[in-house]
Length: 417
Image (tube, rainbow, N blue to C red; front, side, top):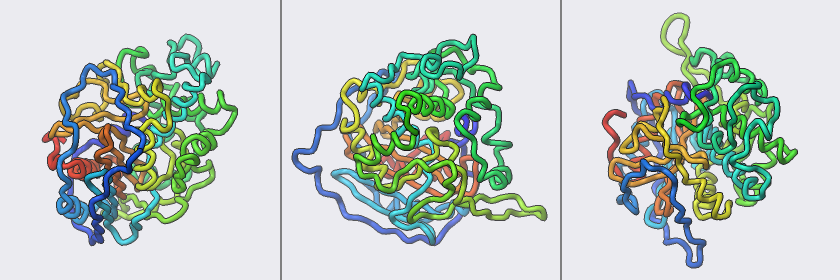
């Protein structure tokens, strides 16, 4: 999904409704086990950092249950998982949402991709300051400015967003008709190159999924292996993330327990028809094609934040946000850091909640599925959310963000969002 399409995930909610809900509430979790590895304390490189509270506020389980239990009519189901030494809560909403549901995580896939690239950097197989032209000669046209691997990871490459091959006209009707279409990374990049550069590399930050198509191609080139196998060998296998995988090109299903995904398509005689899009192409690949579960995402973030996946030098990159202006990216227009870059070389978004709590994480979306995972640096709180929206223009985002802020005890959202 290109940057312009993805940015609509921050749009306003237009309608609300109620769904039948089955909510399960967990008890408070015990403290972290004695002898657990210390959480890393490296500091990101952003000049836009604002004062932030060390720990989130008290968990309001009733507000979480109420929000999850009154989902708008254009969200067919959802789940929430809150973890941390001082809070634990689990909830589901919707008739076909299992507590252990797997779902399409969209752009949360980028954090897995960045982790693999950073591991290769730690092994000396990838130089973050090395160029795409070096690792993938001929991929970019002659005369293109040098684009570094780090600029791919932190969205400062200036590469174009794409010509519409993978998004069509952006409508639910287009996606329903093209849900099984597969586009290889090479085809996506070729489509990207039909458009001009957005800005000179390293001068601004603009969220752009095409950066991660190219990053995945770098992984395959330097390892001689598939991207899917590298994720399995380096991340999901060692961590025991059995519900998390990169689907093969011809694998349209969500394996294991899952909720169905739907989109509402305008009907010829007026109104809408609800179309099942649970089975769809995994073409977003290293940019947004993975499947996971709430428990697996919580475990992945726990390992990543604790430094179990990366040595110190590369661990610092996970939280390093460049000191650059934001360029047409609504993800970076929330809160006190508005106008500045907000994405790190670890593929993650840094944001400060209205009460001052700093959290790191990522949202992701595919038609029928929208999700988010966020955590405080000290892992005192993690929040994972999966929703099943029927639109493709980000109408569900206010609901998702309300669940995020409530999960961190903030209890409020920024007015303009």
